[in-house]
Image (cartoon, rainbow, N blue to C red; front, side, top):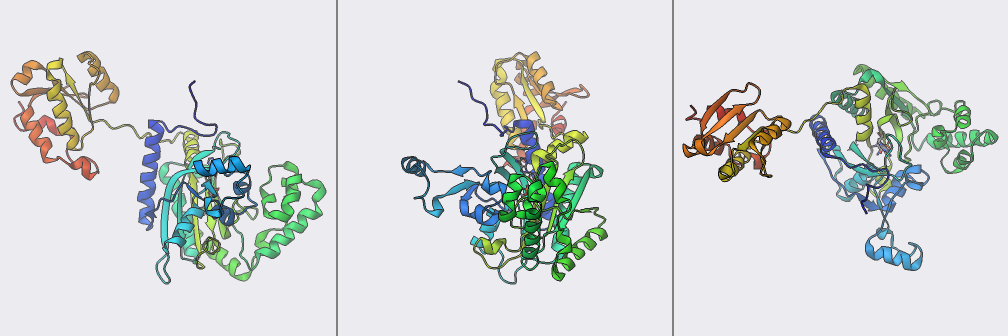
Length: 462
Ligand code: HAM
């Protein structure tokens, strides 16, 4: 029996995996200029990290979490019929998003010491939500996210939004086909009264709304703004708007964020119904949507401020904010716009053997070239010379080195430039000396400082 990957997951085959890696590299480079450093947190956490942080009444926690059980706890749950005997630290879930885990790590390792500069952290990796799979909505998807802890200043909000927009721009997302929505969710001062007024509004319109929204009135009334039911959406158009209920401090903060975005020339749309699906947000929230071609899954990234989250995760009061972008959705947006940049496999050269007698020398040369940081291939299937050239062509190499018994007897190899078809005989010992100068480059990482073309000019070439 052959198996497929589970529903809602996708294998990242080499072309997609290369794109993922180059996207993460680009993010690391750009975010680095804003002072961000990488962080990796576990793919699963103690469930409470999510239920407390993201909120029990959210869809993400209430409906979409994948539970993780170790073998031993799985057996125990089977025997007892439930998880009730498990201690809190034994109840684990796959992460549905990155923020709660990063904030848990910041608290655990005291990364924002009193009076110290903000902690600026970015991450990239898989997230898991048991949603109903469809185009742009997966059960395992990949986010690139950034979190900044330790600043309440509106400049931090503006910086976060600008960094996200610059990244999308850099990746080729057509800015003209996106919209940046922003809103302020208020804080502990002004939100409770606002929440109550939305609750009351829903109760006043109970008859026109779906069952879920009626339930939401008590559990999480603001979620009613995101209800997909047309009747509910229609009713909610007239619901009280948070922006009419902000306290002075929140209003001032929001005004400053907008002024900073204006000054930076970042265009945005104020959307007082933007509430986002996670409960930890306070004040600024934002979302980037693609206007065409993405159906209902048009949000390619989003985020906001969460000034209470560190406390919820058991830490000192520490303001914070961040964003995450969805890699798969960004790729769909790039495909739709025809701006998906290829990140081709890089193979510099191919070493071809005329017959089996030269294979050992070819292998030796391949090793020397790789040690010098070049990407080179040779045949491992006993193919004919013609097939080897075909393979070299397919790989798109610039240079093929042909080893034949006659040339080898004189210590020479034929080097062919595949684009100009120019050929010359090169002294193998000289080529190896040249490569040896760069030996160990690969281990050090980075691009090879030696170019495959240099082999043409290896001392002793004729
Ligand atoms: P989020 O809006 O839930 O926010 O997710 C961020 C992005 O992840 C979405 O805009 C979308 O592109 C992508 N995404 C979400 N769910 C799926 C899915 N099922 N399939 C494919 N892509 C998906 C967060 O996760 C917050 N942690 C963002 C944040 C960081 N807020 C503050 N800091």
